[in-house]
Structures are given as C-alpha cells and as structure tokens.
Length: 114
Image 1 (cartoon, rainbow, N blue to C red):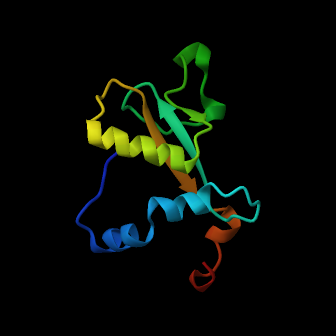
Image 2: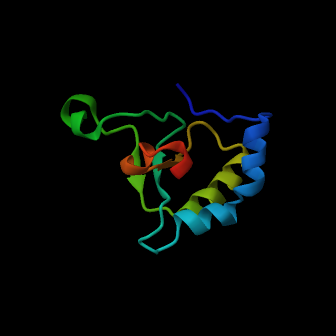
C-alpha cells in the first residue's frame, strides 16, 4: 500500500480552510504541555511507508525497519511537504510523513465532549 491524498470531498475542503499550516503548527508545535494535539514525523528511505509493530520487528531477521521517527516539528514537515509536492519528489527519494493521534482517554469520551 502507498500513502494517498484525498481531494474533492466537501468536508475535507472545509477542514482545509480552517486547518491552515499556521493553525496546525500552533497546535502541534506548541511547547505547552497542556497541548492536546500530539503528532510525530516519520521518514522512510523511499515512498514505501509501512505500519509495523516496533516491539515485533526483528532487525536480525527483517533488516532495518521501513520507517523511523525523527525530530521534525509539524512546521518543518509541512514546509518539506510543500516542497515535495511542488517538485514532484521522486519515489526513490526519502519521504516524510506526519502522523497524529488522540489520547486514549479522549477517544472514548462521548462525542459531545470531544
């Protein structure tokens, strides 16, 4: 499987209007420990991005993991993503991904408390 981009979906277009890079950077990159947005940047040596279990991955049997976490902020990742789109980054070049999540406690709250 390869990562994909979604377009021409009205709900996603509306979110894109609100969720500017500046808005997301202020939520992901804030050093405030009370920030509820959590994310991390990951990289792979090419455009192959695989989900895998770090604890189950045996480097002796399977070689290096397909991706690794890096220390990029959302802002740095976003800047690179804009560059990668503009230059049509080749499949065999390093690719970077940003993954976000919600704390387990928040995930199981009633919808009206999200």
